[in-house]
Image (cartoon, rainbow, N blue to C red; front, side):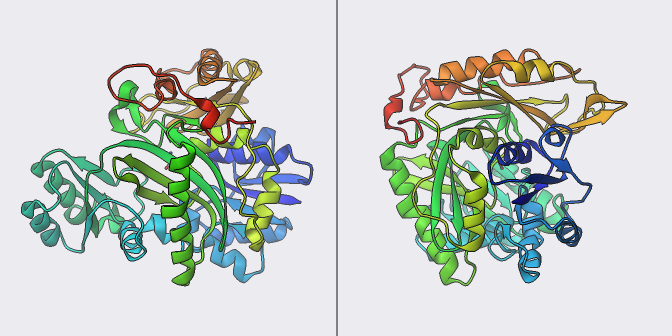
Length: 446
Ligand code: GLY
């Protein structure tokens, strides 16, 4: 099987790396890829924002199956385009991708189907949003979300009314996110602990994959601005069998059934962003793709052929059993460029990647890397994800940081506390360390 991976980040490197090791895969192509991906796949220049170009490439190269990493091509209808030409592809159609590309759609949809989530109001004008804020319906803090895709920057958690009003003005009047911000969703702020849950769906049924926890803020102890993710670990100790059952019964299955009933059957990876509240798991957001950096820690744990799972998902024949995973936690640390998550410096020489990758039980996935005169250089905000695995979270953390210590580039920044929450078990928030009973977490049992 010849497989095309669309995208150029560390998530796509993890997808390509996994596929390239599989028995039934004759070749992995990646468009556009990066220097790390080029070690496991043939990279072809293409713009993921131009689905017709990707279709042309898939036809020319006689690709058997295409898998899409980022949300943008999905929201632009790449799956509709490929399907219309009979080209197998894994991912949601443009209409189904609205679960991520329109927060208003996602919230209304959840309300229609009884999926637990925060109380909300969709506002089509700035006046309506400012009135709703003045009315204090949801109290403070208040969550203000731009409706459309905003590169992870469209959500503001406003501690006070002035900040909420400013977020509305920036989105709806000043046009900070273009058309994506012309509508906003105001939401009640949920308290609890955050985790992510991933399934692969085939339009009707789904295969539960794994849980994970991301570290979204730039600095240790969850301080500073939000990023695309500075590190992740999998599985999440918070997703006990009881919680996982509730997530499947109360969220995943109603969503898939609801999408099918509304004529938008969901196919592809579904990322459920969760808040585990005192009342039970609630949805913070959906993403219509695998997470980044979660894919970098989940995919290496997968103990069966991803190419087979993707093929079954593409044809609507996916078994509904849980996927099989290796019995060892994985921890991934993102190495980012100076300035990230704002404007970054690029073109800085990177050293030590091969030494890091040679550390036993470590993997290095490329994201913002490029080549200049044969030298590996930085080319983006998140540059590399260094992953460690081991029999315990502590071992996996140690491996990841030992490997990361070999990498250097000018301005490199990383968090030093990735995975610590797994050691804190249920993260009681009081600084205490309580042991994790890993024997009860799926993916960690033999
Ligand atoms: N890790 C967050 C995301 O993939 O959007």
